[in-house]
Image (cartoon, rainbow, N blue to C red):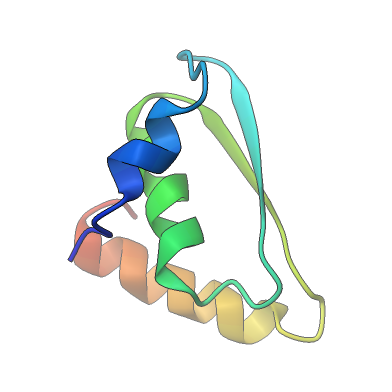
Length: 73
């Protein structure tokens, strides 16, 4: 399910294809940063994520499952 405020969050920035966005999240498992990353990927942006190294394994697995489920993998 897409986060209800995703369009509000993403529309507040000048996101252009080929641009780069850096998403910062402590754990990488909350829905909003993942949704923003997937939306930016759909808009042909380069997406980088900064997360807590202690959480990275769990976050990566969660993102992979979520992206695959959402069709963004």
